[in-house]
Image 1 (cartoon, one colour):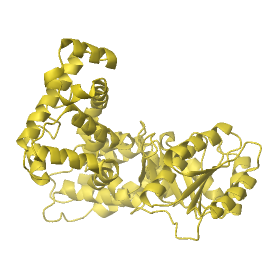
Image 2 (cartoon, rainbow, N blue to C red):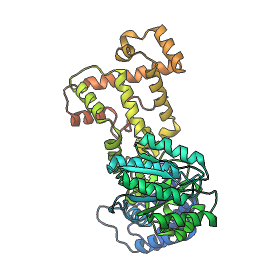
Image 3 (cartoon, rainbow, N blue to C red):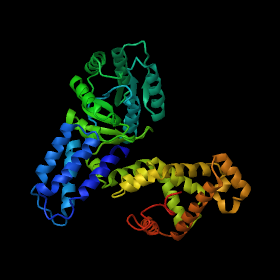
Image 4 (cartoon, one colour):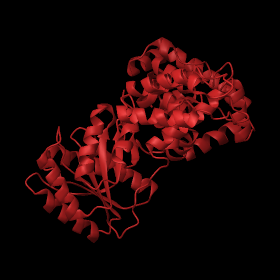
Amino acid sequence: MALFENLSERLSDSLRKISGKATLTEENIQDTLREVRMALLEADVALPVTKMFVERVRERAVGTQVGSGLNPGQQFLKLVQAELEHLMGDANESLNLAVQAPAVILMAGLQGAGKTTSVAKLARFLKDREKKKVMVVSADVYRPAAIHQLATLAEEVGAEFHPSSADEKPLDIAARALAAARTSFADVLIVDTAGRLHIDGELMAEIQALSKALNPVETLFVIDAMIGQDAVNTAKAFDEALPLTGVVLTKVDGDARGGAALSVRHVTGKPIKFLGVGEKTDALEPFHPDRIASRILGMGDVLSLIEDVEQKVDSKKAARLANKVKKGKKFDLEDLRDQLDQMQNMGGMGGILDKLPGMGNMAQMAEQAGVGSQFKRMTVIIDSMTPAERRNPDGLLNGSRKRRITQGSGTSIQDLNRLLKQYKQMSKMMKKMKGKNMAAMARSMDGMMGGAGGPGGGMPPGGFPR
């Protein structure tokens, strides 16, 4: 998660300096706390929030006896993690939908924050995970393109779209949509509102009127994680104007420094409920302070990884491959393409490594080495083959076929040969697993890949594609 990369790196460096001490004292934590303070300020955390955080860590740390089995560095890390969790809200707070249907969710925020996309992502989340019937409507009469965009996204995610037009009044649109949601027995009505490039009286008056008319059960403030310190002032203004119930932090996959996530909760007192982690409509994650704190400190986020697997991996394809391997049937390039697709669905190699304990640096290395683009290139090459070539590359891929495939995929013979080399390595590995159950297969794969901490570093066979 790009949002916390710099902060994670700085904090990891500063926390290393305290290991090996017998106890935590004012003197031996002073330098580390100074580094923590600098790391937070560089990450765009608001100054008052940084001061409060560092003071709380100091108060808890000084005089703390190091627990059995922990060294002072680990003890201090535990304290910092606990305070990070507290700063971001202690626990995930889900949406309150336990009201008479339709539950109304009002989305507020500045233009460009990603409100309309977040409406669609939230609709998909509620439909897929909560099994709700969702209707969406746009009350943004100043941007006809926003209405059209929401109509397109609603169709993509399978939500009911209530039409509106630029010549209507937002209050009339809202009233009509609420009546339509009742008639169609929708569980949830999500209302997209107009944004401006800056906060102004007209915008606030309009959204306050909408709030009074709709009496929403949730009013979510959508904010771009990349605007840094300005996020705090914007959040404050919206919080004073509206009965906010939570925050949706968008674009956390961008090159942001993370300060907004750590400041917004403290400034508004309202929980961050969701993170927008990409452009796709399934790229919305419930915000878990404990998991995010763990990732900031380089300790991974295995729970989110498990949820990703459950939500995004095609269980039928996975079971089919496991069965194929168990029976000793040949692993082919169609199987390899399925594996690459599943990995991309879970955020690519970097996204997976980022959630594994101690693998934060590996995730960055994977990004720098261009592993994601290499995997995409491999998929394009496989897509340029005929079904017969995918099933039997060893027997069919002669020189002329290779030239046709590389021309069709815009790649080189070297790219194709590299793919075939990796495919052969995976085929050998799969043959060795014949007859084994899933647990034994996992152990075999771990052994062949060197284990997470071994010489292979848990990388795919052959390491990073070059």
